[in-house]
Image (cartoon, rainbow, N blue to C red; front, side, top):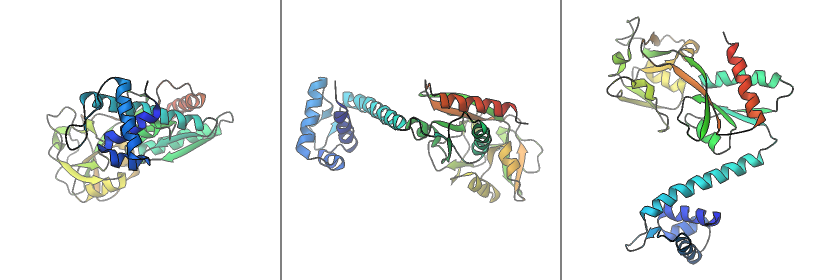
Length: 287
């Protein structure tokens, strides 16, 4: 069975495909690293690298082992991180906007419970929430609906979405729009490539044209106001951002905006369970 040290060594070599650079990255000498890779291959009984050319190339077995080793090391790092945080404050994160406002409502009620542990709220960037839960930087995340096979996910809230358009846009005079009306309009792109609003073009044969790259909701509305893009946004964001240069219109067939809670799959944390129960009660009492 490979050792953790060997897995880390292997991943470094697999990333660099160069023993010298991998050794520098790991802070060790080149000969011991080369011996460690040979020993790992003997232990596994399969070649991980093709050394016949001028540079290292991963074999098919090496590619598989690289993916599996990365999963093991990530799980180990997460376990260490969470173990070190046992007994500390419950860390909950959310992206700016709808999720943050919801999180603040939940955390206010959570803090009012004398039996609840300390809670620390972290506002994170777009697309970071699931990864923060995975690597142990956060215990729970409030985020838009995501695919999380290694996370437990609970739908917290849904709300309609509206089209945000420049005040002088050709569609601004219409009372109600459809997604077909928007498909030829440029759509904002988040600066993180992992953040993809798949629902935007749901039901349409093609996706909207790429618009400007944005980092947050404020910048998104700015590019809309400038006529550089049209965006589908949660109705709560529209209500909180009334401005003369942006017009909001209902979209009859737009899928709802979904806000979810994410936490480590199979977690038995009493603090997480208490937070989720607080979230459910808070949502039930929302107008």
